[in-house]
Length: 478
Ligand code: UN1
Image 1: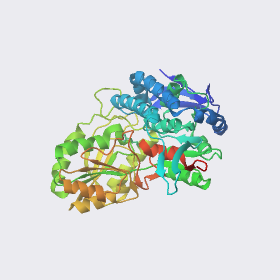
Image 2: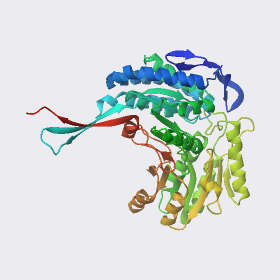
Image 3: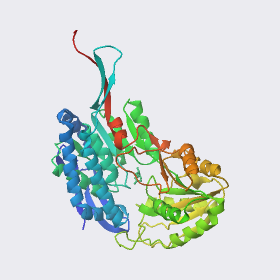
Image 4: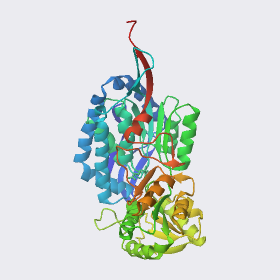
């Protein structure tokens, strides 16, 4: 059954008139999940205009009142977790358990920011002058442009939009074209929660209209998650206009298994990191560095697990791995595998995948050296392996390249763990757990060229979505 989706502009549900939008199921490309009208640059401009009008009323509400809308929306999302989780699976392709889990995670994120007013919202410093205090207060930026990727259709939008709103900004949001239905659901939840008109505008459009949004001269900030190429372009254009920008981009995240690791735990976690969500997470484990003393045993155990993956329709409860998002993603991932094999990579393990639907066989490849696949993010179920002679060598391999989003270090030795914390150049480090995952109350984002601008979530989100005023506060002459 296909759902009719619309954009939300100034409190009205609008059908864009730049052509039709057809949202299909990557497991069954003939099945239409949602349809609607595609909006264009003029709707983006309208969105920015109505968001601007809404700023002063919204910013003047107490933070707790703004948060209450998020908390109410969280309840609505939670009560729809099963139905919307199934819709998420049908439009994006992750398993049903992951789809439902993601919808619940969005509710949790909204709840976390819904309570932002209960936390500190500024700082007081002492002054070197008598009779004075120095306050640092926080104020909203204004109108924020939000551009989100396909792979977390509701959680990533929630973790950008919730802090933007609670700290007093209004939003114009362009969701990824592949996942309009969950964008529509999130906008519905916030509307049903009573959010005032124009505070959130969600515009279903293609990437050309997305460019019109991020280049709009009346935006006060831009937040983006997605590919490195697009992120850098957005960051460049925002910087040229003097607008704060936050861009979360690529990753090539290593699991590093040292000689003393608990191998059973490491194999289990590497499987989750590499193949959950079909490898389509910027935090997915796409590199594996094995200490040479345990490499053979580890790969033998991993091969057993890879062969047990069940690739298929993600609505089927027995399936562990769904399709990738589109035919073009499928093609570029398969090409990446072929190029690696052509360059001398050894196929360690693969799992069977169905012929029809946008499936890719989960694949583990051992590379002869740090060749292209060691550096290139394929965004699919592909794990590249290398061996290291020493712990230092393992960290060096894990640090190669321009990305530094996350890593997973497997060791039971405190000295090695501390060395990894010091030496691994990443924004997120998991010790003895998989490379993906992010809690809403702590900073999320990469080192090196994985991210640009302040990090997301927790206090880091407040840093990005507000600016400070330093107030030198004195009374009159005593
Ligand atoms: C997670 O690891 O659960 O686009 C979240 C991405 C990341 C989010 C990862 N920004 O995959």
